[in-house]
Length: 440
Image (cartoon, rainbow, N blue to C red; front, top):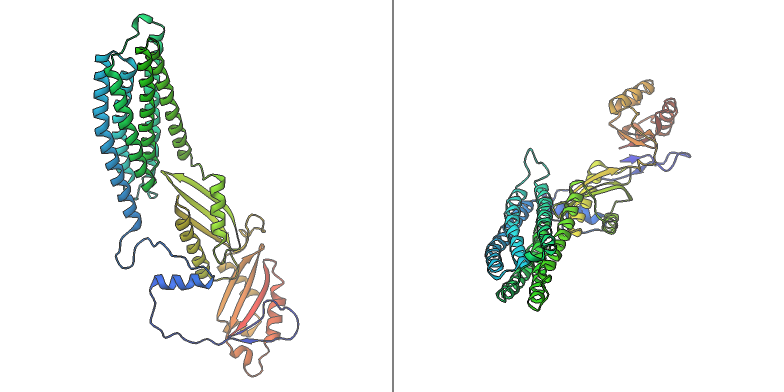
């Protein structure tokens, strides 16, 4: 191929010859081709492909199933424990005359309802995307977390209201029996174990809903500690301490409820990743070969995960396929290196559209070609052109025209004069910036 040097606009015409040979090697697999293409930029990235070439296993589907199994197992264990604990604490509180222990038993009973809520929402959230929910069902988990927070708030208000009423009615204060101490101690041990058990599953599958339920168990354990202190103090001769312990438990439950609900609301209104995580994302994108700059980086959180969309600035003269490859590299690098990110949209920009002149009012390809044909109608060689590329840059259109090699090397050919005539005529239309001529 002979090409006109873009960097040169003056001086004698000096064509450059580029030889091209056919590759007769066997076709490589898509994964190996992608690997080789990435190597061009100096970045060899072990990609996580959506479907494994050999096994056909869908990674996203496997993750959803794992999350569903984790939610089901952790919820079942928590539900069984809450049934036993709520019965034991309520019965022991009634028989042992401890209002704080009864309140703690009701708290455990509310855990049972929340476990059912978590299980139903977890099953729904694990469903694959469909026509009505193309981005999946992760919001069900967020809504369930918010509902769990509201439920805890209502429990806290009820417990606190009853305890404060008893504090202002001394005749209604209860004197616990020693048996209530053992029930409170058993609740502390079992609930603390449930906290660590559920939290381990939450970390494994990155589920905010399971993490919320784990903290629900921890709040139960802490409230049982307060109940233990209240019962002990009352048995030691401080009759108000059991009711005071109930109020403290109510406040602790309300605090956990507020934190869970507030975080869920942030997700529902599409709150993005924290500033420090955004900086990590920016650095990861900038490390991808072919990326010149980035702008308009946006993220939003969803059920323990995050999605991102970003505009990436690349060399304006790369091919469409090369630009697409760069976008794939950015997408896979973010999914591999940023734990939260599971969905990425990359927009390839040839220039920074935040600061570059707008190109929206320029003619599209059909209109631009019609203008070129009108401008160059008097040039016979135009009829032999092979291809025309249009580059929409800096508010104008830069044109690349490809001619057969015969046009430059045939008898009587004047490639330099042809180039000059094309450029002179092109200058008459302000939508065009320049023309580059190639022969080959």
